[in-house]
Amino acid sequence: MGEEMYSVEQVADRLGLHVRTVRGYIRSGRLRAVRIGKQYRIARTDLDALTGRPRPARPTTVVPAEVSSIVQVDGVDRATADRLGTLVLAAANTGSGGGRPLRVQTVHDEERNRMKIVILGGAAETAELLRLVDAVLDGDDGLLAGEAGDA
Image 1 (cartoon, one colour):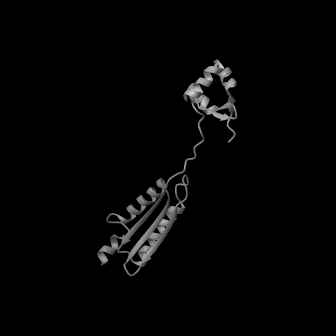
Image 2 (cartoon, one colour):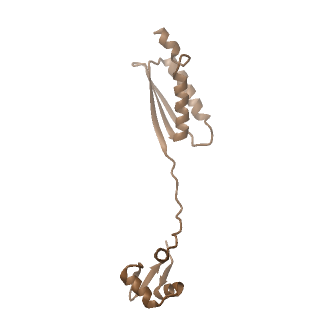
Image 3 (cartoon, helix red, strand yellow):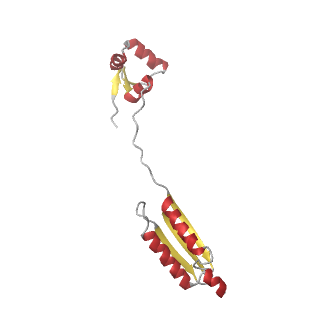
């Protein structure tokens, strides 16, 4: 945290100004300074702001977004739920490898013939898995297509 601090005289030397000019900048508010006892101290960032130099870039930490998704599939018996759960878990565990691993949990409610798939992970990886689930469930040759005719 020890930011470099300068005296009025040091600032005057650096800028090629008279000490009175620097003190005038401080009094007018053009240059920020901290008074310590009878002397002013000027932080390097405040001096840079006066001279128009860009402040040093602070390292930024990029926190990737995490997505949570719940997919509800109605009209699913236990056997189909097991097949779908195995497929989704296998796809999540063998993902593209470039991103963060997904966390997946599946739950089947036998009373309502309903399945829920909970997915937690990066946005791109989650989207890829959701596309797979959609492709498996959608269409005439989807996982649930055979059950619609049986009912």
